[in-house]
Length: 257
Image (cartoon, rainbow, N blue to C red; front, side, top):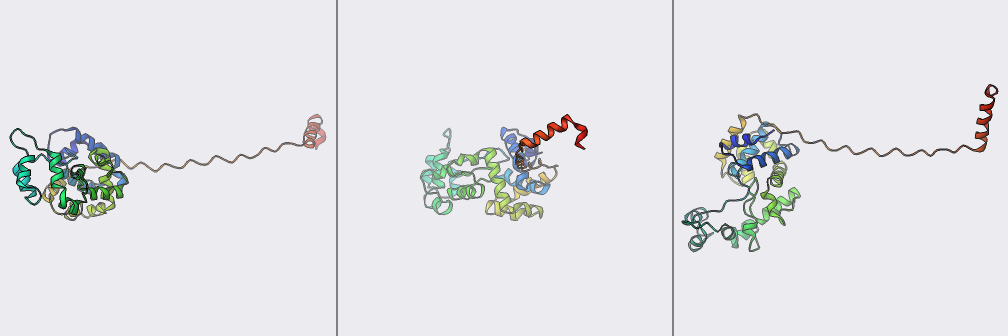
């Protein structure tokens, strides 16, 4: 069973947060059912999740950027200097994270790259879940694959239980368990993230994970269907002749032979 201490070891931290316990519980609940059930598969999956969630500490993208951070990270083609100054963190002023999300993930760029079409889509579909899924179109893909209604209720991906379940479903459907068996860390990162961003950190986390004894509870067996009740055999009613014969035999037992 994966513990909160295991997650901290994989993330390379000793800091304790409640999210560690929540994610460990959700992982133990679903991992085996989706084939993440041996050392290599567990290590690869959790190494990627560790990077995406800031060491298993957050399931929603942190957009608390400074003014300079906004411009350096997203560039002036995504946010103007005027908007960065207006929305970014500065001095004692906190960043306006909702407005930032709608700015950097909206407009023509957001429509083309993320399928964001509504004014609040940038915020509603900001990076979420163990895989940091971003954009309306990508939430729709998760919904199609997992069956979870994350388009109508995007907060589901930002909850430990449902977010972990969705991530594990995608991991299995994309064939990443088999790739983990072959140690294809780079290829997995490209499939999971769409590129090599964070690859060095994932490799480090995987290395730490492989030093642990990682197991998960077995998947619950499918329930056995209840056997149908035996069909009732109708009781045959004795006729008057059978009753009379039985009566005579009872009176004169010796003559029945």
